[in-house]
Length: 195
Image 1: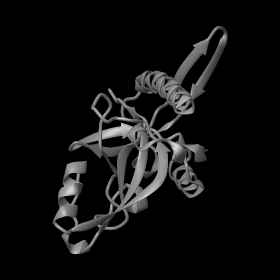
Image 2 (image 1 turned 30 degrees about the vertical axis):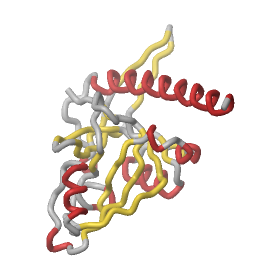
Image 3 (image 1 turned 90 degrees about the horizontal axis):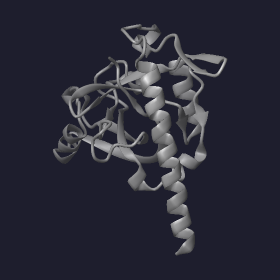
Image 4 (image 1 turned 45 degrees about the vertical axis):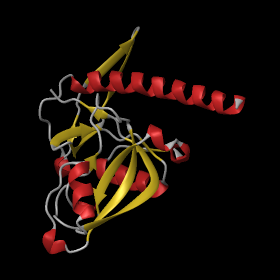
């Protein structure tokens, strides 16, 4: 019991620290973020300066797009629990994503669900299909910067259409239109606001 309590307290400390980092990154990225499109249609933050004393750093983090609750949303990817995903995101965004295998050990309650399409409508999403879908937006109940990746496959590609919410995906699954393969792959992809 004591070990579980210690684990929960450690986990909460990590969540608080991640929230602070996400808040800081969100405000840094939002500065100077008009509509700078890079190759592949990804938005990029540019000239975001943070300073501490006399030191100054400039970082550029690719901003990716996806859908949440029917709306276009933006997020960054910094860490992933599987090396193949690290390599894929790094190659796609040209930003070095960290390999963090312990993300796969995070409790289910600490993750939100992210859905990537492996077939269907071609687009700028993962596997060159439609944009990914997340189950919650920042500020929603159930939001977490940690996404557990679920692979979505249309059973009949001629019925494929753009789905923009987790509810749409669940409805299509219940009608037998698609299948969902749950994974234990977790990626740290906090939402960011673009003003």
